[in-house]
Structure formats: structure tokens, C-alpha cells
Length: 350
Image (cartoon, rainbow, N blue to C red; front, side, top):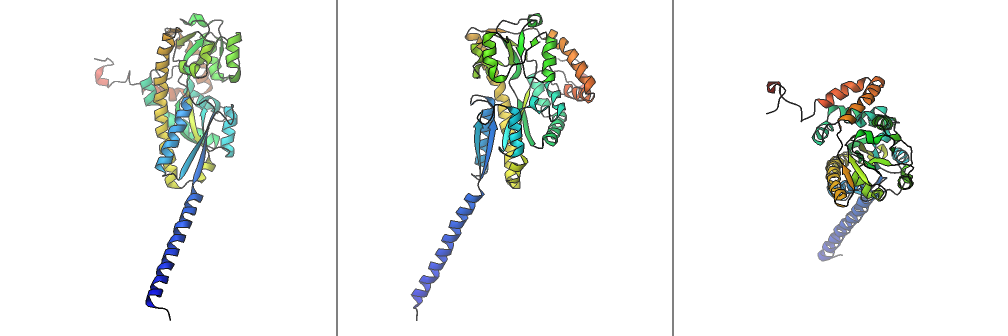
């Protein structure tokens, strides 16, 4: 017969074994449930897209206590934004940042946000980016692509014209061969400005500027620096002609991996990352305008009045094609803090 001590010992041994098994299988189960999200963008590690991805990664991993891990693929999977969208749709990657201009094939009305001088200032853009119009467009982008649009933020296209010869006024655009995204709206804008729009593959832009096949591009000063295009241009004309955007998407297949709490974490992290990236983009642009001036580049600030006048043809053409854009435009203009006043002010500022 077993002594009381033996019985007591065996009972505790059983308890310890059960606890060990629970702990062991709990760890295994936790490891099995760990989720990895693949975040892809087409630019290099100096670009705002990388900041977006890194911020998103840090926030998601911290808020999920390591349940979700984010792996970033900067400019490695493909150089084509169209292919990147297809990778998302197939579930080959989970999250991606894509230029709004490349979404037009799925949802043509995204073009509205690329209209020239749609936003009158940075302050106007900040307010309007959160407007009902933009939220409606984002919902429809999600429906059209079959992806979930988590946020929209500024691209570096449209801040300036970077060229091999100075542009000090609209007349200087005549005869200048400009490379831009082969988006019908972009082409119309630059043709009406007087440029000769010349198709050039993004990967060939450096050599095209070097050889004179093209004379200019429509990237901002900062982007010309990080993509080394500043080696083959001599001048920057600060026009802020378009406030182009990028959209961060998550695939529905990726969402299916997440529970409701994890989905909220991902959505919140994307929103915060977008806000930081948007602000950072403008800060860096201003820093690099000053840097370019110090380094001896010609930096001009042409009068934008003639460019805005030339844009009227673009508005007339595209409003005719898309009659609902006029209502959207009017709503966006109501949100300009530089001109909005209570009626009691009589239209005049103090």
C-alpha cells in the first residue's frame, strides 16, 4: 500500500505534468497562430513608401503583441505597379502602396483627385483629403479593385517640373519634351501647359534625360534626389501643379487571416502611418528645395496664374466627360480654409 507521502507526491507530479503540457501546447498553438503580412511597394528605401511600410510594421507588431509580423519588400518583387495590384488581388502579397493614377483602369473616377490645382494650398489639401468626396471615392475604389483601400496619401508627382533648362514662365514650356505617367489626364494637363509630352518608361528616364530624348519630368525635388535624377537635370520649377496620391491596399485574403481585433489594429496602424507619411512628404520636399538651391541648381517659382488659366481647358474637357465631377469640385472648394468665412464677414478678412 502506498504511503500518504507517495500519494501526495504522485498527485503533484500529475498536476505539474498537466501544467507543462498546457504550457507547451499553448506555446505551440500561439506560434501556429502567428500571422505574417507581406508589404510590397515599388520604390527604394529612401522613399516615403518605405516610411509608410516601416511605420505600419512597427505599429502593427507592437499593438498586436507580436501576433502579427510584417515583412517589407521594397522595390524587389516588381517594378510595375499594374503587376503589383495583380499580386495583391491574387494574394501573393498582402498589403501594397500603389499610385492612384494606376487605379484608373479599375475605377476611372480616381482621376478626379489628379486635376490640376484642385487643392489650393497644403492646408486645403489636408482638410479635403478627409472629405466626404474622398471617402466616397475610396469606397468605390475598393469595390472596383476587389481590394480594401486603407488610406490615401501624397505622392511626389506634381510638386515641380524638373528640367535640363530653366522654366521661369509658362512660355518656357514650349518645345520642352516632358516625361510623365501615360495617364490621359496627365497628358492633357501638360500639353495644355505647352509641353511636348514624350512617353518614356520609368526605368529609362535617367538615360532619356541624359541623352536628350526627354528634357523634363514632373517629379518633385526630393524624388529627383532619391532616384538620382538630379544628376541629369539642372533646374526645378516649383509649380505644385498636381497633388497626386498613393493608396495603401490590403487584400481580402489577408483580411480573412485576421480576427476582428487584429483587423482594427491593421486599420488603425494604416491610418496613423498615412498621416505621418503625408506630412513627411511635404517637409522633405521643402528641405530639398533649399538643398538644391545651396548646391547651385536653378530653382524658380513661376507665376502659376497662366498655368491655372491653361488648366481651364482640362476642366472643361473632363467635366464634359464626367458631369458629376463638377459637384465634387464645388464641394472640395467649399473646404478651402483660406477663403471660407462666415456670412457675417461679408467676404472680407480682417
